[in-house]
Amino acid sequence: MMNFDYLIVGGGSAGATLAARLSEDPANTIGLIETGGYGDDLLIRMPVGLSAIVPGRLKSNNYRYETIPQAGLHGRSGYQPRGRCLGGSSAINAMCYIRGHRNDYDDWASLGCPGWSFDEVLPYFKRSEGNQRGASELHGGTGPLQVGEQQSPRPISHAFVKAALEVGLPANPDFNGAEQEGVGFYQVSQFFHGPKNGERCSAAAAYLHPVMHRPNLTVLTHTQALRVMLEDKRAVGVEVQRAGQRQVIHANKEVILCGGAFNSPQLLMLSGIGDPAELTRHGIQVRHELPGVGKNLQDHIDFILNYTSKDSDLLGFSPSAAMHIPGAIQEWSKTGKGLLASPIAESGGFVKSDPQLARPDLQLNFVIALLDDHGRKLRYGNGFSAHVCVLRPKSVGELGLVDSNPLSAPRIDPQFLSHPDDVAVLLKGARLLQKIIQAPAMSHILDKPLLEIDQLSDEELIEHIREHADCIYHPIGTCKMGTDPLAVVDPQLRVHGITGLRVVDASIMPTLIGGNTNAPTIMIAERAAAFIRA
Image 1 (cartoon, helix red, strand yellow):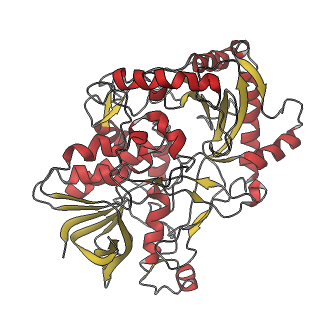
Image 2 (tube, one colour):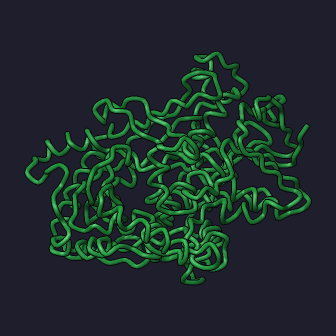
Image 3 (cartoon, rainbow, N blue to C red):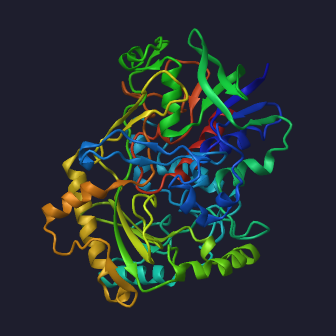
């Protein structure tokens, strides 16, 4: 029988961070359960490997979830890749280090989450961050997560930034600085010195892999959590399936769910914690009524314009692109630089659809490859894709169960583009992308669009958006923090009404932040470690 003081379920961005921090205290024993593997495969360590993992061509390291058909997307099902290994989605993402706008966290505090304003969470961002630029008022210089400049951004990414400046957008050298608005290059979670220079710095590589030798830390990979074990209203362990056998792993102090916005609420519901209507529908005994479990699902909806290009120095499916690969492999293995070190989404920015707004409501991403259906449809030739996503969508969905089988995928219903304001904002973003791509700086590398939209009316373009838009992999909110009737956890991330149970991951965010969600998730785990150790 295994027994730990703290039992963490999920070794992703939050779980890896939390396990490392809690195991710093030798007086506590820490157990970490992860469904996937170790998270150090070559395609994970090589940044450009995400182009193979995210589309799901390989069965490992990616849950490859799909939404139910979305009315706002003309009945299409959306694709939801999520990391399935130590490091979680930080092992398969584009490595963009973005915190969001400072007002996003002030919003959390105003919504009944004291202690979560920007000034209060900034020390935990800084604690996690080892920025190549060094420590400053807004940045950490010695944290485990290496955050650096891109090793070798492509010339075409520079052209996109220049084109954005030509249409009047401001330059911004630091999206996590005093101001978020503007265009430039992303800093990325990538090793920038030492023997791993140029490799992905996932949360596991940053926090967990270096401390696996600690005698008070036990990491169990390829272990499926089935349900949280309850005695009355206290969590005492987790039933798991490991090597084909079921067993119960006990927790003396706390069970901590770090499965993310899909798997944490799913495990709560499988354990009898949630909305009684949802549980009884699937024959699950209600152990604790908590109607907000699975509600409040939010994600960034994204629209892409794809163009073929005269530039062959891109990630593509063509003879000219293939000619670069042998040299790129040699360059990356020796220096950590070159095409294989690319996060693929190299440049971008944060812009306002209306200049009267207090903060940007659109994010731009420039990708050095043709990206059709998340890369699941290969396009012959060289090209690029320009993305725009709505940062604070008003469309809100939910997550539920399809049945009571823990091995089944959850029922994911984001309700994409169900709110008309999201459609209007995304339309403005698409028109802005058109202007940028048609600016002089792009003319020497631009060939033609995969689908001509310049002559489309707004109504026709909206229909095109509904035919092609999808998420950009930032689900949050399904175990939201707060004190209102639909809150699942309190401001210290303890599950309402259950002793010894917390949720620590992106699911606790009450509202979606304006940017990529990986850095905030790591911050949440740093914050939780401080709560627990206090």
